[in-house]
Amino acid sequence: MTWASARNTSAPSTLRKLVTQAIIYATWKQRNNLLHNSQIIPPTTIFKSIDREIINSINARRHRRKFRKLMGNWLI
Image: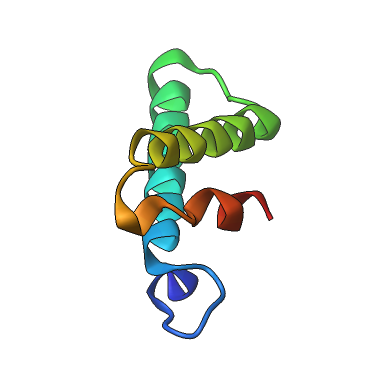
């Protein structure tokens, strides 16, 4: 959470917010899967879904000014 709210970092605040949201969602999904289905999602699957969610979010909004350079920042 410190990274998400930091001002002096190489990642733009929009990207930090996207990443934070994706991590919280993945954690919530893992918790529900464990609680309701007694299944644990492997960490590699979680990381891939977080990556895919962020890429999809950036692509969906790529025409907005704030999102134009985010893909380059994310893929670095």
